[in-house]
Image 1 (cartoon, rainbow, N blue to C red):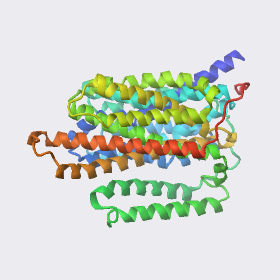
Image 2 (image 1 turned 90 degrees about the horizontal axis):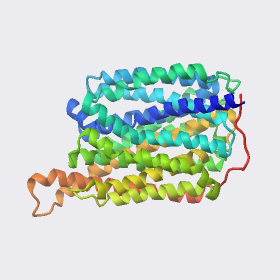
Image 3 (image 1 turned 180 degrees about the horizontal axis):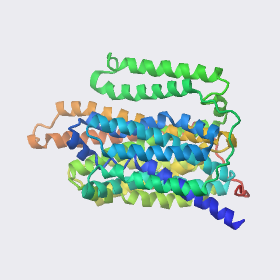
Image 4 (image 1 turned 135 degrees about the vertical axis):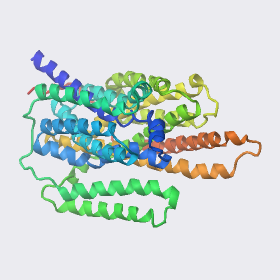
Length: 482
């Protein structure tokens, strides 16, 4: 019995490490962005697609990947995702143009979309709902959310000493190691559904809708929200989502059985996580640019400046199961999101010449504590009360909310900075030094992005208050063995 329990925790470690790699890859590139920009001579609007291309495809295909895990076997889909992710990472590193890098990042996100929900669904089937699952998900959440912050440090080290391409090459040996270990220890007989029909029309329509939405959001600030360069993409999004809804209702084996949303906490948690992740992505993206471009930090120094975040996340996440026992998941999620909003509001006062220890570090500590609390509690709420044969689907929905939230949030806030930068340029102080104008505009546009991110976080708080019913874990539950 003890050996079986130990094997469960070993499986959890391997799967969490895989998720760490997936999440890390959405942030590891942040520090390398200025270097990639110089290598391929990319504009800021095109530069954000290095991040968005990955997170968008990741989010767009997560429902497909989660459903495939339920239908074809979780281990099988997980291993396929790991191999494909590693292969695309190799191609990322060999990119010879910005377009090639964005294209390979799209395919890398596809690999992640199969790997991530399969991994989480394996975890969900190994632990019954309650305190033991909350502990497992706190480990999962700490590793996953810590991956975003740790990616900044790792990206800094790799970029400065080995070049930005190693941000992608590093995934190759790690993917091989995860594949070998998972192949040996993850059981291949997890519960699967009897049919193996995949809803291709549903997968295509929801993915195209998300792609069109994010692209339209990036075009709006430049060409106008009602221009022919923007409006058609919003039209495609609406048509695609309407088609998706009717398609899912008439399919015998839909990609997304809509009755899963009868679980009100699952629905509420996913709607809440969407803006929470969007606000966190905004902070990492724009603060990375601020620290490097305005303060002039090296990539390694930039990475070290973010090191406090994963430390704070781990501290918060390890305490979450105990806190949830007292207050319940809902209020932990709300409390964590409040801390994220406070961190963003604090950053809106960043001066041109700031001090890291007094102007940035306090916000990063608050962010880490908030992210650890909100991500872990949100995961617990979004996966509770789900039937085992739909665990892959629930995992896919959760990861979709996170990744699409990040993509949409980054697109909106990149648009905000571009739009406000033009307004700031028209209302410069009369006595400003001409050489300081680009820095002045950049800093004030970053502030605007942080303010918008704080507003998005507040929306998450309101949604959690309205939509989520508070629950506390039962006092007794067992780990599932077998």
